[in-house]
Image 1 (cartoon, rainbow, N blue to C red):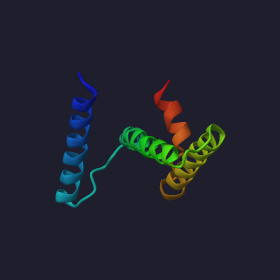
Image 2: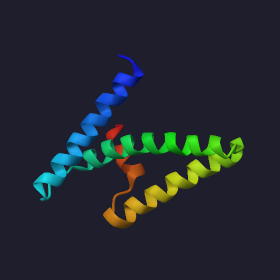
Image 3: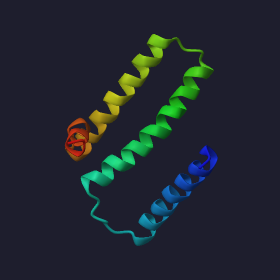
Image 4: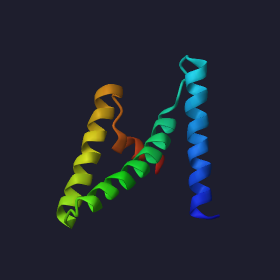
Length: 96
């Protein structure tokens, strides 16, 4: 399967889920695993966009690494603050 085909399939699936979620307008009862899966997709997209921005700014390697680490820590903090879920522990649980 070509990269473009995979990208199109993923983008359509994400759009379909988002649209269905909006249409039913009620809690779905997502599992922690669903949060982790959606977070992994979000992080993949986010990292690509960060990389594009870093290239545009011609950022050095150390600054790139610091930025990505800071972003990851901020995202972990945000999720924990609003859900009480520690994403690092969540990953550990599902990697057992």
